[in-house]
Image (tube, rainbow, N blue to C red; front, top):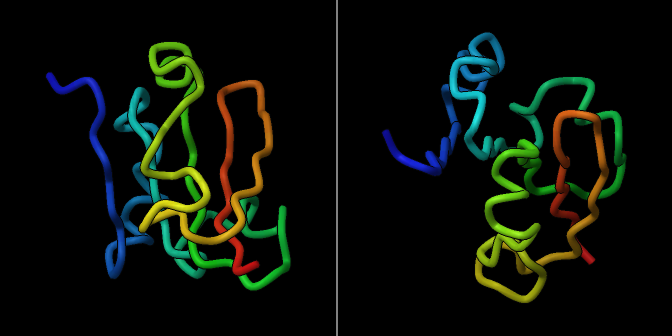
Length: 95
């Protein structure tokens, strides 16, 4: 089994939401319009993407997911972070 499975859901976003618990130890990435409604309601800015990072992954990576950080080609915009009991939700907003 892989340690991290990056699920890039574009047109299959709705399927990803229905099966959100299937890969419970993986980073989940959605375009804003394909993300679960509860995540979209966190930020109403000009959002590009939303990511859920489970606690298991955050602990293993010491909270540092380099490709999602501000200033990278993926995380080029402002990245807002929200803690939940199960992990963190990161939101990529245009600065």
